[in-house]
Image (tube, rainbow, N blue to C red; front, side, top):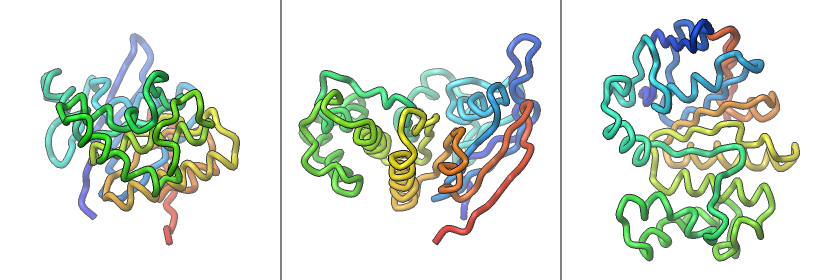
Amino acid sequence: MSTVLAGHGLVKKYGSTTALAGVDIEVGERDSLAIMGPSGSGKSTLLHVLAGIVRPDDGQVLLCGERMDKLGENRLSELRRKRFGFVFQSGQLLPELPAEENVALPLMLEGMPRGEAVVRGRRWFAPLGLDGLERRRPGQLSGGQAQRVAIARALAVEPDVVFADEPTGALDQRTSTEVVQLLTFATRETGAALVMVTHDPDVAALCDRVLQVRDGRISGHSQFTVA
């Protein structure tokens, strides 16, 4: 399994607080990684550094061997749009757009004609259990349905990596399990890596690996056998 995303010696400080204290991490194709830890442990900072949202004070972030931490803002922004997908706790869907246009939005922002973008995005509706919901707006969807639309949007750009930040934080346990099972299945099917921050050990156990973060360092690592 080739490495898609790697961080070497990652350090990030906010004033006198050290959020990351020399973290090393690698994620491969079709690899799903859950990052867990108590509040303030550095897990969200680690995700943001790996996603190019926050620059490390020291260390390297590499996407398929390219040094992300050395890129200019324009190139970094382009990379995030074209090669990363994002799923957030609240979904962050646009309430005025139907589901199919929410999914197609990243493609349209890159210049793809609306019709082509919608067709490309629609292919995720059946695999994610969203058939028949293409024209519904976010307010007409359940929490689990809205998160599945957010997953479809993240996958529409055919990303190298999907980043999920507490994607089940607003869902009940049963819906959380369903959503993460779909997320891990979909990323494996497309060959994308998945990096997910979660506080839920049951959700984390659905991933291939779990990293425990404490005081800005990796404090534990578990690996699971995936059928």
